Length: 358
Image (cartoon, rainbow, N blue to C red; front, side):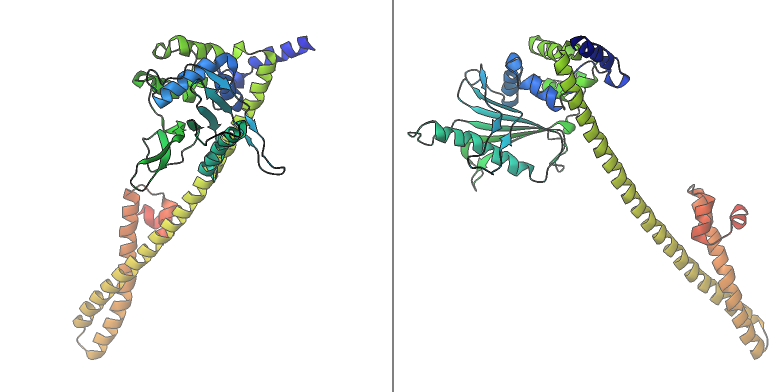
């Protein structure tokens, strides 16, 4: 059995679609392995210290991982499952979530999650005086939830009063919009820049860039190297990666489908507007030319009857000729703009032969 599993592992690692050297931190398995395991807790500690910009004395030096599955207090009520849940040496509580897709009430869910550490505190002792430690809910988002600020990547949120002053500093929400981080490797300035770059791009790297080489990041690279996974871990990661790719492909397909639908609507609307505008111009210019021609030819006739007949015929001929001239002029403009002949024929009413003769 073990030999068969090892052979399967070797085969899968050689597959063309598994040629990535490092884990994709957007997957559930990879995120929890890097940030949610005892063996790698110094990676989470470093990440949190950088994210919160904690100074000496306030820096986190140790964490204890807590149960990530929170059961409801009453049967039938909703439970909560976190990616990472821990307590620091200062007593602070951190809930860290990798959220790969947008949800309708994501912010409300963050608030819901924050209630579980508070409930735990209330159950510790009957003498609890309601003093709260600092509680952080951190969302690492693989989507954009605030499009009005295209260059803002990290949002730090606290309860504030109507004078915009912090009402309670012990409850904080931090959101990181990974898609907005666009710095290249040579543009990284801070440790937080480097963390964001690696969270977004680690799986696409073939080697360790010199810009992100120190003890912590070398530990990250070593832990995230796929060839260092054991058989069981590799099988779990393969399933997690498949789920991630399936989600990504589904999302891209939905975007392409919606984009095509919008494009068709815009094209149909534009064609209709152009067609109506062409018809309007043809009609107006044709009538104007017809009237002018009718008057001119009507005056040339010496007799009243001739004038009447000439006027009538002139108007009719003028309308036809004026319309034709306008159609040709518009078709000429369309040709200059590079439109194809079939579309020009449809919009102008001219035959393809007439257009070719312009």
